[in-house]
Image (cartoon, rainbow, N blue to C red):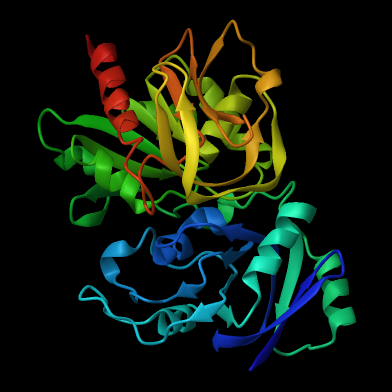
Length: 372
């Protein structure tokens, strides 16, 4: 079935559906990863976005339960050049089209994704409308212009957990995970802004984890007597998540804090800094980052459209630790007075390289120091 993709600047692309039908709006972005489409689909950070894959053939290896990064798909629609409906992989338990249909997510193929990606790079991330029902370019462009976009929207409240839960190597568990934790394990409260399961898989090797909603107060978090506090990734505009910023500000100095992506941005705001929207964002598994403390270059997995403003941070309180080598934007920082540090990229490598996995070890070290 034919589908139209209309952008707010009046540009229109055409394609055809390979999964689901209907009409959806969102901010249109691109991801340069060659693999990892299932992890991208189930990453809550993509809530409110339409993702274009730059790799031309998607669906090759199907989908499976083990590669889920959350309980469901969160992005609004997926755009590819060509969909492969015959996956070949011993791990596959289904194909991509059926996976998208299960969650009623539009899958569009036959699009000139090179032209679309180039347009986004030049014009910036744009509001967009996709439809298999309304095939009038003028009508769809008008709808795209009226759609809400991401700036000023608190999307965290749409993806955060409703009830607290724990995590074991077997997956999520209901109730208080601290009461059944193994002796010697560090107790970590994870604030769920839209977290990915691989963050919990890595932490659970040495930590007992209690996941709580983004609305949880600092008092309730400290009442759990954690050894450390983890701030997850998540979607949307960090400046709109005002409650979480205030909560994190109250937690600073009480326990070691480690933030990733949106958690990093919320820490920046809690430090008194500001955030801004990048032109087209960083999304892919091949972003070069320099560790300013060691001089080493890391290839990182990234997914963000907002960034902490370097100039807004007090250099007497906050030390820059990582920088993006493509555009010199901030990729990591640590507080000089409190045991708190964060990175903009995704060290949990799902999908992507393992170069930054050491950051989880640094979090363990900070908790060990705090116990001494």
